[in-house]
Length: 117
Image (cartoon, rainbow, N blue to C red; front, side, top):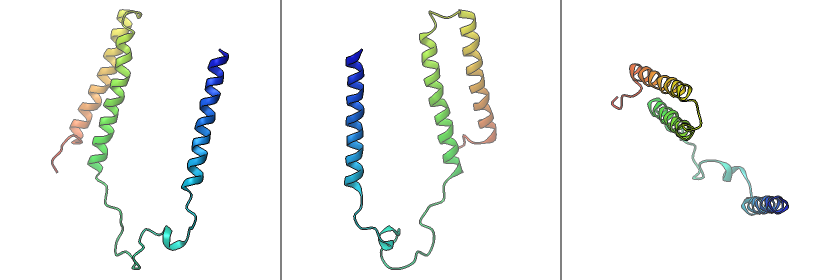
């Protein structure tokens, strides 16, 4: 137990030293207004340098994250099959998957899954 505690402290100290060194070494020595500005060529920009963000891409990314988290939640349920009550386990999984299917159906009806514009 003491060895585990000492190893944890050692890992924490090494991580703290590495973070401190990287902070010290990455500091810029000379900070001025021209260097901090996004354009260093001498003229003012004509328009914004940011491109417009597609809302459809954002919705597809959110749907991907939802189903990615769903896989992370379903996989441990498979491991608890032997130690759980089979009826409660079945109802829990059924309700979980039903909520996901209803959400997918809603997204489909809203047109969020259309790839064509």
